[in-house]
Length: 357
Image (cartoon, rainbow, N blue to C red):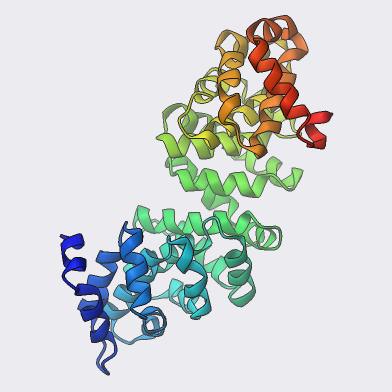
């Protein structure tokens, strides 16, 4: 239906309604629906020059108009080519302001818009932190409000996770008291909480220790075992960072080794790589987890990962093999054929200092 409407000229007709002096919530809502999950329609709507008008309408007195304006921005924001244009239109301050809106739907959609604008876009994250640092306590407040929908808390958690991925904003996210509410969301099985914990925990040992006190490791292990594909990926990444440089946390996580070995076979390359990173840290605890990983087929799965591993993932894969070799060198050598050994030589010769070490 949406595709047919777009072909019939709905987008310019709806955009024209927004140029009139009287704002039109129905037109905004229709455009938001057309923008959902369609890159082509997102671009077409952007080209209809509705972005600045939508940002302006975020402060409209009519609740339905604010809802629809936030929804349209949220649904346009996943499009990589449009993210920066939305920010240039002044969306970050306007979205931050309505995170405290009296209407729950406006809050949810504003959080979703920020999550989409920040996702895989470091420059937008820094721009958001610079232009509207107060968005961080507002987002933390949303993830604490159990009266809001799960989607609202997911979206806010995702936005906070993206902020925590960058040096400056990360301090502010932790200082705003995000640790306990992230842990509460993690207990509910919300994947975005694991992503937030992943990004918070890789910088400072004291943050890892504080998070670990609340049972974070146990809840991440449960998510790796029982979560959906996205939850498993984020939980593996969080375990990787929570156990990096911490044998104490590694010891708490030894029971997850077989599940991480299985996750090495994940269709999503990043999930497999983060699983390799978590295994590299956890099996350093001793010979027992190393043998458990060998018995679970970890070396064969790491070998199968080699052809598709990303440049960033190479180090994680090699570290996993190195850690397993502490007490299982013969098993590692036996499991790696000539092709895999050649691939490791290629990794070594690629110029990465860590791999040469």
